[in-house]
Image (cartoon, rainbow over all chains, first blue to last red; front, side, top):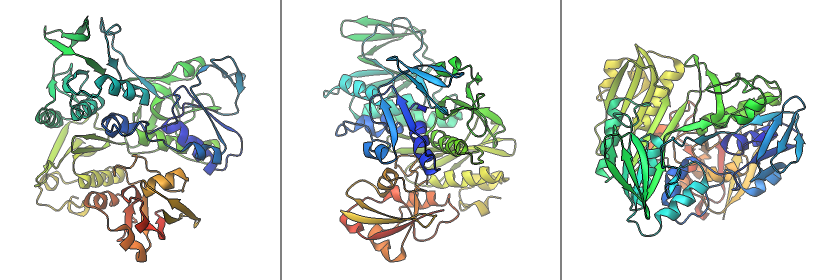
Amino acid sequence: MVIGASHSGVNLAFALRREGWEGEIILYDTDPELPYHRPPLSKTYLTNDERFSATPLKSAESYDRDNIQLNLGVKVASINSKEKKVVLEEGSVQSYDKLVLATGARPIVPPIPGLDTAINVFSLRTAAHVQGIRNAVGSNSDKKVVVIGGGYIGLEIAASLKKLGADVTVLEREERILARVTAPEMSKFFKKLHSANGVEVLTQKNVTYVKQNDFCNEVICSDGSTHHADIIIIGVGIQVNKELAEQAALNIENGIKVDATACTSNKDIYAIGDCTFHFNPYYDRYVRLESVQNAVEQAKVAAASICRKEVVYDIIPWFWSDQYDVKLQIVGLSSGYDNIIIRKEEKEQPCFSIWYFSGERLLSVDAINNAKAYVVGTKFIKANQHIDKSKLADNSVDFKPANLV
Amino acid sequence: MAKITFITSDDETIVLDGISGSVMELAVEHNVKGIDGNCGGVCSCATCHVHVAPDDLSKTGPASEIETDMLELDDNTDEFSRLCCQIEISDALDGVVLKVAK
């Protein structure tokens, strides 16, 4: 039984069949839509008005073909881990042999006074959220949008809504956007990119309350500034859906704690995807990752382990973001870096990479329109190989691993 | 419509009829082993690597610059390598044989 049918839950179900699982496979999700790709929601799906449904992960027929029972629009109310049963919200009780929590996360709604009664306030996590935003933006494109939060999701939504013609302002509480995840140079690059595309990015804007006037909102910051908003988008992060795991008395830290096989502190319960707190051997610490890669790869490991194969989860995390015509690819985790190298290529469009080090050890690479840097970085991190920083910084040195050792 | 043949690393042969979309989407839809398409088809992850049968390279065309760069992630890349999220299905593809990379 799998609770949560998005990237991790769905991939687990199909992986179980591939691994030879012959028993029933039952998926539950509260979302009524056929499970879909989430990353495009804030990118192409938001701007493409010809698509009325999100791209499915798998067609409805493929669930039938693999005899996977997909139960959508169904909420699991509680787990009784002693009796190995779950109770659905409509009251029925279902038993399981193995339970997989793929419950993901939900957007954080900050406790800003007035936000709960303001009009046209959206987060973005589901296809329904996108539909809501699209309806609010409507066909006439003169709507004023305020995005609270200058992280990747907020910036992607800002770029997409600008493309739809809206007048967009991003309010970031920190002194720079992407402060938690990138070096200042990258924050500067994205701020400039958004300005060049007509999106106003304001930093050190701590929203203190929201006031509703007739048919629009006023967003008020601690510096006294007021920002008119027909639509408010909240992009300040997520919180793990851990309530069911708590009921099952599982070990929870910054997410549901799992071992290298994605098994929780209860041997019959696994957890996968955004909701897990798991060990990463490359970085020698427990991490919680918000990514498709983590969802899919951890699902495969859990499926293999449930089918009694010996597996260990060890990935080098990667991420990507598309904003306007810029493609950002990230490999590794930069947290804890103490020095960086910036390498710029001589090209017409922006093409550069930021290399994050702890001492001499390469931790992570942010590559802007530069798949080469992303690939070279991945190879060095994977091999835990020393990289010559002076050669790296010199763009006349051909970008090949052999040239950089 | 195009008939597309996948040969997996287990030497399983899967023949599928494609009408539209990318070859990766077709493969994922039919659970072709070894093709994940994790990034959803935006050339960001290199989890849909195939080797085009040498005689069929004219049907698929060569890899783009970013695709070539991304293919370098894999040590088994050769001149017939493509990321199949970047191959659009059309009649021109009919009869193509794709070996799923290991």
